[in-house]
Amino acid sequence: MEPRKFTQFVAQLATLSTRQRMAIAQLLPLASRQENTAALIEAARAPRLACPRCSSVRLLRNGHAHGLQRYRCADCARSFNALTGTPLARLRHRGKWLPYLDSMLASHTVRGAAALVGVHKNTSFRWRHRFLAWAKNDRTLPLGGITEADETYLLESQKGSRRLDRPARRRGGVASRRGISREHMCILVARDRTGRTVDFVTGRAPLTRAQLHRCLPTVVAPDIVLVTDGHPAYPWFAREAGIVHRAVNLSAGVRVDGAWHVQNVNAYHSRIKEWLRQFHGVASRYLSNYLGWRWAVDGGRIGTAEVLLRSALGAVPV
Ligand SMILES: [Zn+2]
Image 1 (cartoon, rainbow, N blue to C red):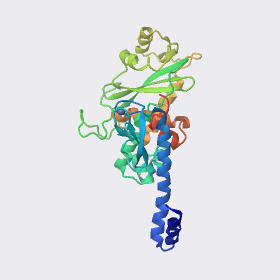
Image 2 (cartoon, rainbow, N blue to C red; image 1 turned 90 degrees about the vertical axis):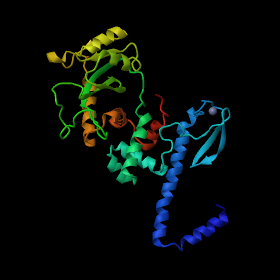
Image 3 (tube, rainbow, N blue to C red; image 1 turned 180 degrees about the vertical axis):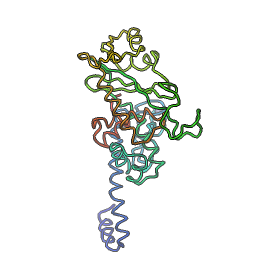
Image 4 (spheres, helix red, strand yellow; image 1 turned 180 degrees about the horizontal axis):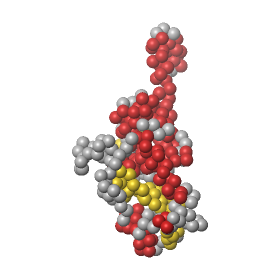
């Protein structure tokens, strides 16, 4: 706005009613938060900005839309912005993203976050999982040195599904059979002694050696010492993968044998389960998102909404 017009505009403010003045007072911080968020998005995406259709990096600036720089691919003419092709594309109310991410760092429920930020609860649910889609992969790899691995189980949940593929459980809680069965989801966690952690939802029913082959080799250094309990799948896997393996004989009452124990990974399991309790059951199909969320907040690893936003945009090396 020109300086002269701005002076007139300010003079007009005096004629506003209290309610109108309040409405403007509420809009202003939202507008500056929106700009601030747009700047964060542009900065986070800048290093890997490329055409979403042909991956070309020959880009032309092509005006602004919705507060973001638009680009045109010099090779295929496709138009896009920094959010195109990310899980956050076309999410609205950008001025509320950072407060929402703050509420995620505080582990609020869907409804709690919705009320706090002023969005509908369905929006709150959608945002949570969009923000986690890439953030959950924000891990420092590979794990190295002494690496503990262990599996834990949660009762499988079809929360939110329209059709169950099994009879409903009365009041959640209890499996119909004893022991680990197809009613349980298996979570595999590996953690090295520097605290680097990865987790996998390996599916229903007990862990198998084939699942270990699918999960572990890509995330651990080849020279780790893998420490596990006595589950028979681990030594088989380690031998086939050429990894040094130590088993702690928990069934014989041995919990710690010098440096060989799985206490860190078991403590991590406990924190996951304790933390999940506040959500009153999470649908199994979203379980990996929750594990990523837990990793973000574990020990305050991600401290601010701005860092979580970068993580949600894949700006952190994976
Ligand atoms: Zn292109």
